[in-house]
Image (cartoon, rainbow, N blue to C red):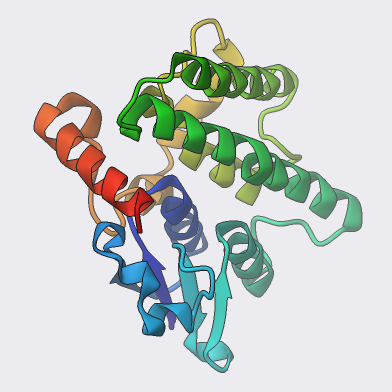
Length: 227
């Protein structure tokens, strides 16, 4: 049994989507980041960095794994799925996982901070991060012009990037003209496991269309930035 400590964020969804795709049995342990659950001694014992997601694999001697990318790689290696075993294939997948972790995730995260959460509207900062997100989207679009998936076959690389790119509206980033990216996003969205994964631990699909939900989410996010 795997325990998943998570919250409804793109990084949290990376873990739950992989667990769903792999068909692994897991128990959800919701972490309320707005209330500071991630800073409790109990959670810090699992993840010293105090961030979600994290897992504890009870079948592997209570092994704790933190950092969303590390969790994805661990689970893929545990099952022998979604990550090739040959050196070249493995490298191609991990490169695109790192692309998300070093680029897509941090840039969209900063766009969220300045576009949605920061009390002052600093337009140069907003433009800087939204423009960089758009550039990274164009990198994905260009690559997907000649490739069905980010690596040779469907893998954790696709899941990692999708969990973030799908939230482009919240970051205020345009997808206009990126037909290859649109095609890939559409295919990903139809996968049943991913549909289930993004509902863990709670559904937030109405966020962009519900003003009250937007405001509540914004307040919680602002509070979490101070903890």
